[in-house]
Image 1 (cartoon, rainbow, N blue to C red):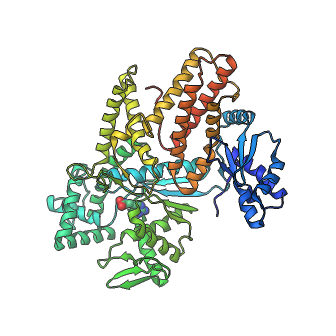
Image 2: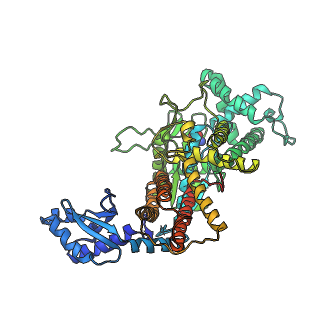
Length: 594
Ligand code: ARG
């Protein structure tokens, strides 16, 4: 189904409709009436380029066509001036009264101008993708932060959205861990195949143990073929349901999940589902059987595969490995079985995978396999890929020691830096220790998440905490700071007993602010359609900047007369609401004070 929206009343839509009917009245197609924000804000607010396109096809003079269109539009209340520029552009300037009306409508609109999807869909967003025993690192920030924001945007636009962490708790890495623990603590009952008592409820390994054992085992598995065979065998036995292994594995999962919940909690990332790859396991055997019967799963050198290459492939897409020669289900297998599972349990219209771009081929394989199997139709599965977080050398970020920076430590150092920055800026002096800590936490998270969201998801960016944490420039702390300023103006107004009232736009800075507030819906729609929260991030940043300009040019609390005061106060209130909504859609919260 094509994605469409309803309920937009922004100038782009309203002017677009007016202009479209003018084109129709002149015998042209409505689509030529499309209106966009002007790329010359010094000359116009909006522009329409349709006359040029029409004239070319009709072999007419574009300025003449533009003139005919203009004749239907003059006198409309929205328009202060309409000029034909250059070869035949239509340049619109919105009237002050239309801007005032628009601001007053937005003040009453709890959606702040946002439209909704035309058809509500059920969407599953697969993001986060943390793994058992592998601590989350800076790379895991991206998928978590982008996925969370997309979830919130789609939900706000009216879809039913389910966020699933798709926990990496299955496969070879589990076999590696079982092998490593069996070498260190061979006497545990988990390894005794004849054991038929109760397994201990207490985990034999801590998170620290797992984090130490995993790289160790993974290294050994690469070097030592015997070790690798043992790990593969353990994987297979786990998947086949060996009781002791299942019990031990359950401990791994529980211990790891606790740390993940802590880290995601600190980041304000919330999943609706904590399904793991293992949850798809019951679907694997029947699926393999079904797809073998269909002739889709075929034997290949002792393993079983699905061929997914297409004739017009530009680069080679290798077959998807379904069952290894040891008989284990693979990464692609669990993903395919998960598609089946999701269809059975949720019947989603769309599944969006927020996962690293480096897994692109994997998803091509899995999606094609799903289409071939009839589990999904083309377009129902989508990989919203992301680039990497790089160090100053342009390669994926590493600590000075060459290791990966753990997400937990990263959040911790961001928090420390936020405290220092607040103090340096002379902020937070009047806050209690508790409020200061809360503000610092919000600033730290805003710095990390906004750095992420202000880049297009596919753009790899350089991790630079110092820059992210600045109160100036395109940063999270800057946004929060502007929101806090608005809150403090409103608090002072309340103290003085001044209330917001009807908006009357007169000053250029007020015009600019209202035009931007009017652009919220367009930014949301584009973010939604492109699965690109950076467009919303951009809007919120420009709103903060434009507010700052407005506040410098238009005194609020010391405005000369009462009507101006309450009009400007209303603009502050509205701007704050939209900024806070935008922040919320990015998974951020502004503190009340700084
Ligand atoms: N756990 C995987 C990794 O760390 C990411 C999982 C992504 N989601 C999925 N459905 N494959 O690479």
